Length: 165
Length: 74
Image (tube, chains in turn green, cyan):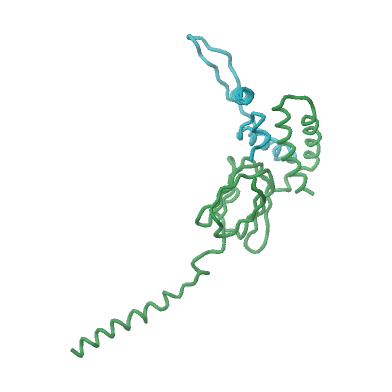
């Protein structure tokens, strides 16, 4: 009888002694504070599931910053600047022509766009020349469609001019 | 939210194509020459009726014209 009691106490003692180190797993270790970013164009992959701190995107509903554990959402993008804040505080800036950003539940952000280039690859003179041309068409007496297209170009170019300064 | 281009008969696809074209044209000379080739679309089609080939049309232009006609009839 006494042997049985001893066995029972040993059984009870063992799990607490062995399980204690395993249970010490806090929220900070379990959940990464980085968001996995994929920034892809039809012809190029700029980021492939890379861990970054924050991504600022120009959504159609307004500019927004996306951190880890963001609420899942789908956002249409305006032509505009995407800012990527990497670990260590360095930022990368790309101008995208428009597309979609999808925030997935497991801290993944996928951005799909048609064209995207770092800011230093743009020429301010080319932008200025195109604005003048698009304004002429938008204010002219072309077809409704030509005017609509010129207004789309103006939206892109004015956004580009604002970030190039 | 209705976009201005939508009421003019443009599709979202067309909107993206126009926006991307503007981005490509704004690049510096080097990357621009490489990028502009991507905007070209050469796909053509013809409708066959009674064993005869119809007029050969550019797909992008025909799509555009169809979208505008649809917007006007509404």
